[in-house]
Length: 403
Image (tube, rainbow, N blue to C red; front, side, top):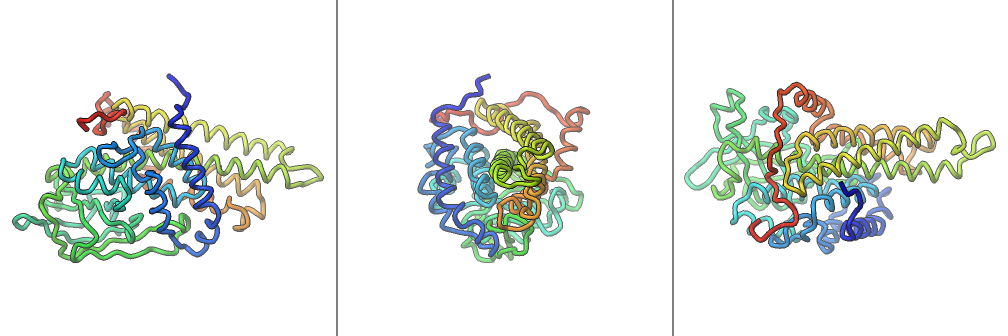
């Protein structure tokens, strides 16, 4: 296996690193404090084709591979988690799902403008009383001729208040809803300008305060039947596929957060003195730095493996789950130790580590809690979950003309 990056990979790293340092880092402390999302980031990312980084050129994307998407997530989260979240929902949860499950008409109508950043996309599964328990959602879609009438509410949706297109999951079979049979759930493309769609912001979050998080309300929203993604009853499978792509971006992003913690602590430990010597000379500080680095390498190898599997067209559900769980776990540990290394200064926003600490916590909850991923890994070991080598729904890279 070749562990070296290509010239294209290095170019992606440099592009996203430069973008993040110029457009995110300078005012992130202020935006995090004021809980303000910067919509101009979307325009600037679109100009560099970051919003279509791993989508085929045929659909307006940059045509890069899935490793490139992970590297972009690393670099963006190094600056702030809120920037990586944009790629997680716009590309991971929405656009890659349309690439894999959408028909020709849907790809041309929705995927092309999304890949170009002309339209912003998000994903609506979670509800006020349903997160990991997907069959607990209450949203419904009742067919009336050539339309579906959608009703329901989605909660904790990133980019809800700024996105143009939503992937919405709702029950189309109400009898199966009563029986909690997930084969009664379907997936739809819903546009913001549809009558009956309203959205709003959520404030007061512990972390990712510079990001856009909100809710979506649907009151008798008419959706054309042609906006059904896949077939009726395939929504649960589509949602699980979407979450896998989102988890991949979270794993890569969390790895970038670990690197941010390491660099912050190395800088601080070289200048801060206690007992008349720089704290980098204290063994317990060295231990925390060593643990951060081991976690970084561990997490990076896991998401790189999952990305490689995508590139060659292999399904990586198990590998992505493990990468997401471990990367988020190591990011939490690294951020906690980073605060400890900074001592009292780590407890205020004068240094970025307190923001890293708050941001790291969210990743252990969204895209499948750490408990869900532990259960998944155990189920694979116990043969409760099937782990046969199967082709991935995503097209392998490089993308052919028949994508």
